[in-house]
Length: 136
Image (cartoon, rainbow, N blue to C red; front, side, top):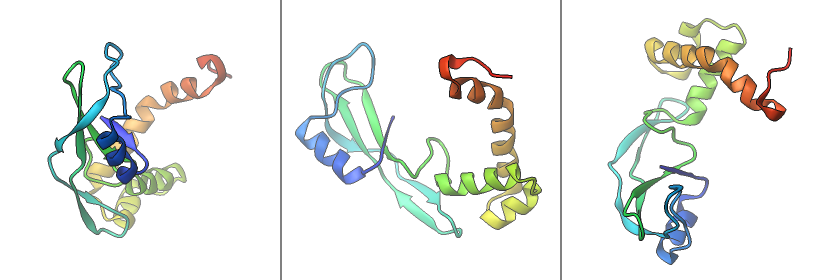
């Protein structure tokens, strides 16, 4: 999966074969192949948007890559802004249930997001520091 800031430009790059396969063992160009499975993504305000990203196929290794718009999250039915809204509210000490209601998402999903960030927080902190070391 490749996260792209501009899906239209990525589509043009596929057509021109100027995108390269991200797999480390391949140096092939990606060519336009098909569309990925359609998905419904909830945006801020509760609206749902239907997204059907393009896929590229490596001309060397044959691997397929989905070009997902950057406002979508892999394997999630919520836009980046929705998840971010919940996480920022929780970080600001707002109860998760209140943050979930404001973002129009199920409380259970919001709790999972907060728990995932809480569990991985020390890893994120280490990776954010120069040299990957934790500063105390």
